[in-house]
Amino acid sequence: MTTTDPRAVVVRYVEAVRDGDADVIHDSFAADATWHYPGDLPISKVWHGRDRIINEFLGGMGPILVPGTLVIELISTIAEGNRVVAEWTSKAETVYGGTYDNRCVGIYTVHDGKITSVVEYADTRHVGNALFPDHATTCP
Image 1 (cartoon, one colour):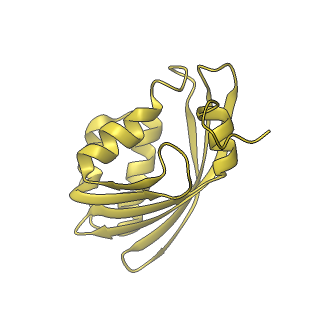
Image 2 (cartoon, rainbow, N blue to C red):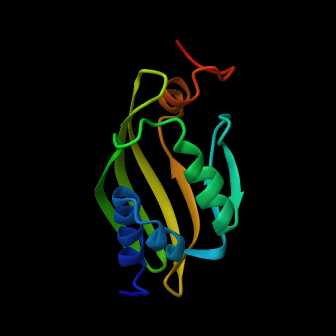
């Protein structure tokens, strides 16, 4: 099913991540999409292009998380025009023996049925401690 409704595009994308549906994840993004992950973590920057977003940013989490433990739950969405704010939780066991358990918010921009930009906000202290324990800014 193809839709151009911004809220439906974002919900479909989040559900595809939850379900591990690589084709829908790929089809959700415009080729020149950007994803901004603020902060000072190894993943903090503006990711340019669908392939880098999927393969390097999203795909880069795979080796850190224990396979089969990722649980994503979409909490809510708010849409206005072509912008959608989505709130979700992500939980997984990490290869470092800990648990990643975060509540996230993404501001998505959608044009012609494709995500063109995302700015994601999360508890970066928890991200650092759980997913990048050797990173210099890890907090106690």
